[in-house]
Length: 419
Image (cartoon, one colour):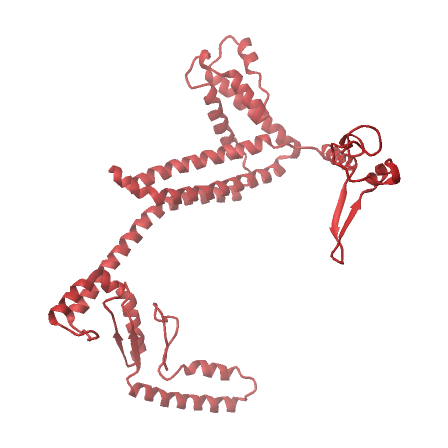
């Protein structure tokens, strides 16, 4: 029997000399059509036949391994050789190579060709000299060393992302296990509004350097927080940048507490958990893509006499900081700007939508029929208004053409008007 395997030499297949009799025995033992005596007789017959075939294959020399090339790794070649010596069985192996094989051509082809030309060996002559074997093993060692360096360098880069991954996953686990998220949300909210306030009121700055009007505008337009800072500054005798920051944070806390009070802390906690997890997941996916792009071109830093791995670690740390800032700002923005509506407001909004839908007229529906044609249906309101035209039907007119009813108005302002 001949078995053809590629590359990995069929490691998942157990090649037993004479065949695998245990599989046949298992099939007989599970056969319900045979009684106990018939099963024992059939198993004895299979074992006798297997013993005969096993001795016959062993007498011929066992398993013969014929390889058409050498792998880049010596480990794979040794695994293939080991197939011929399964559990002490007899066997042998033979490797056939060509000087045109990639391994020989890249590492040892020129040297062996020079030796062949010097010895004037004819084409097709088998070479079994030890120098060829040593040249091949030397080439394999070079490839293995190169692959090892690649894996080592890849592992060092992956360690950076792995450390960040541990931090993110720990945060997700804390969020999912926590019964209350008030402290985490309050910390995110304070950090977000601190960064926002410091953009308009810098640290240790004088009042002339503050942009209080811009801060009021951004709080009102983007965060739905009404805070009359200018009035309070005019009423106060002295005010510092820290006082402004405290007022902004207090106003944000009050606005947030008002939202929580409308629906209850327990219900709002579930919403907070969902927003946190979704934001972290989306930002983490974008962060992994950014790290991948960074790693693809980080080797170019070597031309600037910089260590690529150190540059990668530094920039990956900066990207991770940006990730945390994005999560903080996005979560705070969603929680501060979400609109909490009562049941009465929801019912009113639904009624308004229904009333607007009822006022839509002059609507035509087109759909295919069973015969393959096109069926056009006009709603009742459009049919009623079309009766005002002579003859009861409205001819096909443009929207800017005079209306067929004779009013003198354009069609789009008369019977073609959309309410």
